[in-house]
Length: 103
Image (cartoon, rainbow, N blue to C red; front, side):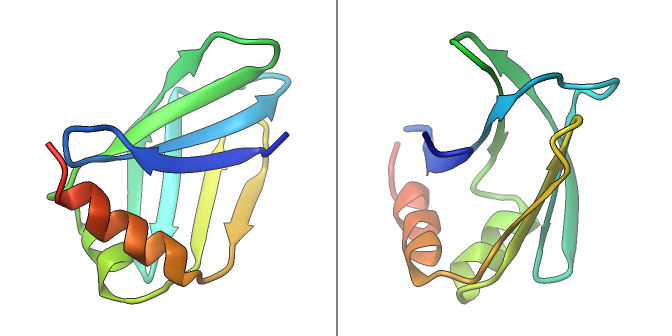
């Protein structure tokens, strides 16, 4: 099962979902760092077998703009899950552009 997912929310935003956590820890924030742009986003728990935390990046956010410009690595830090480092991927850039055209 994947531990992280990115997908469109249908309202021009990008959903970031960190899965498989044993505890969210003392925080209710997800820290996302892309191409030098640092953002802290509110998270919502997702019901399921294992804890997952979900945040949404609006189309107007600077992190979303950074994702659209060029393939960039993504660092995600939430709860007790440690920092997840995703390498640059063209598919993420394409997803960011496509999400911005929905809704």
